[in-house]
Length: 109
Image (cartoon, rainbow, N blue to C red):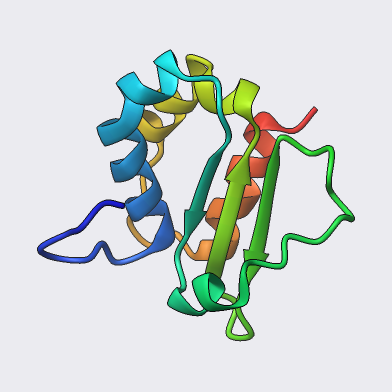
């Protein structure tokens, strides 16, 4: 769990900040990266659905189109491209849906 003095404005900023912070741990450990952006996902246990069970990047949204959670498989999370993606992406003005689309397009098949 990462605690911020000032919460980032959007999920993309939070994700990129966390990946930069965790880059050494991600490189050492081959495990999936799971992030919850909405407190309610912790209470429900996180319904991740099965329609994209084999996708490297899986996401879920709240009713108001905010990113609720994301899961990146262990190979993608521990690889060298995820920190490069997090460093290169510009998060200003990026909606959660746009961020999820960029992340999925960058790492899916």
